[in-house]
Length: 325
Image (tube, rainbow, N blue to C red; front, side):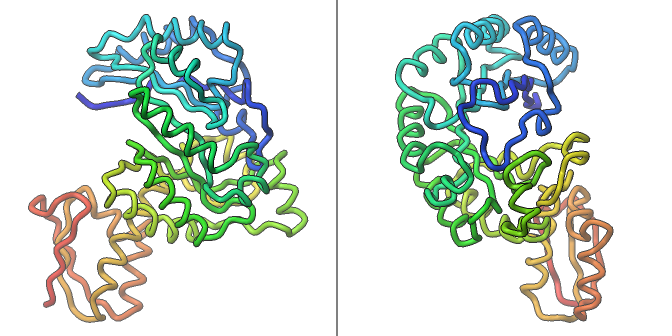
């Protein structure tokens, strides 16, 4: 069966901070808080889709910081749907400074299987400048505690935050890898209306990453996690009309992950000197190789590469066979 999430968004509720980049209602597209009945209805709807198994995933805000009574109502509704067959477990995302033994025991009792921490950066200067309200040490302590309780650990990082640099991002990746998470999400920063970053941008005190900037950085970060055996399960924010309407600047593209994969393929070709080549590529990877609007193909032509593209399922997805002609 294919795997999927039944995503329940709890925007900003319980979060003690207003981070520099945060406008959760814009990010999630949600203006109201979900109820226990909403959880059950979402599961019922998802189960109508055959061939999928799911985790119920509480995203947005800081799940372990919301009121206990409300949190337990949501968890109880979700736990009642976990059957070990098509509904495998529950995933939550939260802040690293709202994790302790007591809350982990409560989550375990309600069939939570995976916890994702919004680390964002492991540089204390960057965390403070972006008003995160926690330290890199808090991330380390929470990650170790989560693993000691037997949960799957996910870590989330952002690139292009205020005062961040590519060098700091690489250091963040190394520190996250040292914590041995099961999964990682990488979110390039998007500047939204009504945020502190938008104010800094308007005053020309902050220069956000472009999509190209972020993609170039992610071509360095992604192999670091993959070589450590850590799955990167998301590159870039999910597609959202609300983000498009409220975005001021930053590295947002609906197909950001594919752009990064496309850059990997372009770099593979550029490792060879200009000349005549045949490139054999899997049918599922042709668009990645040629790039968005064939940007890679045109760029290679301009650089003196004369390429014959051969589409074949004998080459693995995301792999290339490059032969000089």
